[in-house]
Image (cartoon, rainbow, N blue to C red; front, top):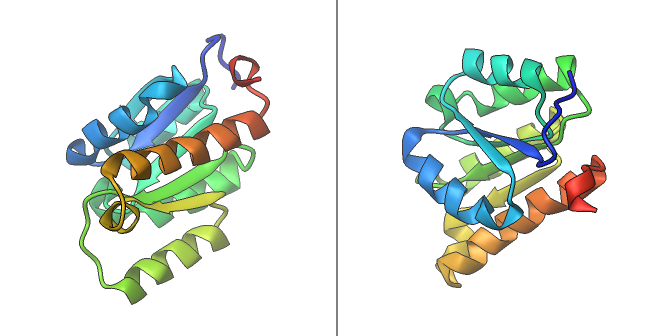
Length: 145
């Protein structure tokens, strides 16, 4: 269902701990940021009209892939961006999770801790914001043109 908001509506499917990081990273978008912490809440918001989903690995007890797969079936036009914010995973586990996310339809994956390891956290936030902005352009949101 389309929404009437002139600003893009970005769903933040994340833990409460990651919400602050996502809000800070996506602040420059001037988007309506809608945090949810479980799959039922995410699905309710998607029905209300969402332009893009940003989902963290630890969302709803590590159910990022469940949400990505469900949205790919019911709303395949909504871009889905996966990211790692606060989790500490072995490299091979993270790579497998991101590969699986791509398989079920994620348009981008961002590893914030890895990116920030060799650079400032602000740079990692810029990369996430840039990935989201690029896909908001792709869906043709009027305020992003």
